[in-house]
Image 1 (tube, rainbow, N blue to C red):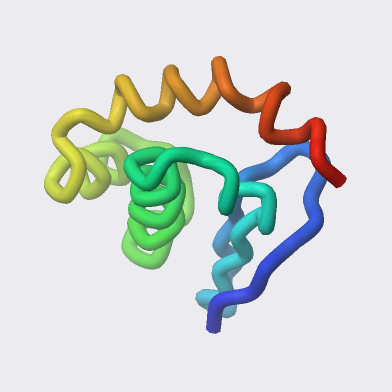
Image 2 (image 1 turned 135 degrees about the horizontal axis):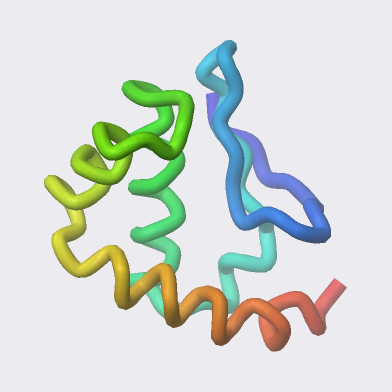
Length: 83
Protein backbone atom coordinates (compact mmCIF):
# COMPACT_ATOMS: atom_id res chain seq x y z
CA UNK A 1 0.00 0.00 0.00
CA UNK A 2 1.10 3.57 -0.66
CA UNK A 3 0.10 6.54 1.48
CA UNK A 4 0.79 10.26 1.54
CA UNK A 5 2.37 11.67 4.66
CA UNK A 6 2.86 15.05 6.29
CA UNK A 7 6.26 14.16 7.72
CA UNK A 8 8.47 17.05 8.79
CA UNK A 9 11.82 15.37 8.19
CA UNK A 10 11.34 12.52 5.70
CA UNK A 11 10.55 12.33 2.02
CA UNK A 12 9.49 8.73 2.18
CA UNK A 13 9.44 5.62 4.28
CA UNK A 14 8.81 1.91 3.95
CA UNK A 15 7.93 -0.34 6.86
CA UNK A 16 8.04 -4.08 7.46
CA UNK A 17 4.37 -4.36 6.42
CA UNK A 18 5.52 -3.14 2.99
CA UNK A 19 3.63 0.12 3.40
CA UNK A 20 5.23 3.04 1.60
CA UNK A 21 4.64 6.60 2.69
CA UNK A 22 5.55 9.54 0.48
CA UNK A 23 5.64 13.12 1.67
CA UNK A 24 2.95 15.14 -0.12
CA UNK A 25 5.42 18.03 -0.56
CA UNK A 26 7.23 15.99 -3.21
CA UNK A 27 4.62 17.24 -5.68
CA UNK A 28 6.71 20.45 -5.84
CA UNK A 29 9.90 18.59 -6.73
CA UNK A 30 11.18 17.98 -10.26
CA UNK A 31 10.05 14.62 -11.72
CA UNK A 32 13.52 13.05 -11.50
CA UNK A 33 13.62 13.79 -7.75
CA UNK A 34 10.20 12.21 -7.26
CA UNK A 35 11.44 9.19 -9.23
CA UNK A 36 14.47 8.94 -6.96
CA UNK A 37 12.38 8.97 -3.76
CA UNK A 38 9.97 6.38 -5.15
CA UNK A 39 12.83 4.16 -6.34
CA UNK A 40 14.53 4.51 -2.94
CA UNK A 41 11.40 3.39 -1.11
CA UNK A 42 10.71 0.54 -3.54
CA UNK A 43 14.25 -0.72 -2.99
CA UNK A 44 13.35 -1.07 0.69
CA UNK A 45 10.86 -3.76 -0.31
CA UNK A 46 13.93 -5.92 -1.04
CA UNK A 47 16.38 -4.50 1.51
CA UNK A 48 14.98 -2.84 4.62
CA UNK A 49 18.27 -1.13 5.44
CA UNK A 50 20.78 1.07 3.63
CA UNK A 51 23.33 -1.66 3.01
CA UNK A 52 25.45 -1.96 -0.12
CA UNK A 53 22.85 -4.36 -1.52
CA UNK A 54 20.17 -1.73 -1.00
CA UNK A 55 22.13 0.89 -2.94
CA UNK A 56 22.87 -1.65 -5.69
CA UNK A 57 19.10 -2.11 -6.09
CA UNK A 58 18.61 1.65 -6.38
CA UNK A 59 21.47 1.95 -8.86
CA UNK A 60 20.02 -0.79 -11.10
CA UNK A 61 17.01 1.43 -11.75
CA UNK A 62 18.61 4.87 -11.37
CA UNK A 63 22.33 4.82 -12.18
CA UNK A 64 22.44 8.59 -11.52
CA UNK A 65 20.77 8.34 -8.10
CA UNK A 66 23.67 10.07 -6.32
CA UNK A 67 23.09 13.34 -8.14
CA UNK A 68 19.35 13.18 -7.41
CA UNK A 69 20.05 12.46 -3.75
CA UNK A 70 22.40 15.44 -3.57
CA UNK A 71 19.91 17.70 -5.36
CA UNK A 72 17.11 16.66 -3.00
CA UNK A 73 19.25 17.69 -0.02
CA UNK A 74 19.76 21.08 -1.66
CA UNK A 75 16.05 21.52 -2.43
CA UNK A 76 14.74 20.23 0.89
CA UNK A 77 14.46 23.52 2.75
CA UNK A 78 12.57 25.15 -0.14
CA UNK A 79 10.20 22.20 -0.51
CA UNK A 80 9.37 22.30 3.20
CA UNK A 81 8.35 25.98 3.05
CA UNK A 82 4.81 24.97 2.10
CA UNK A 83 2.77 23.36 4.84
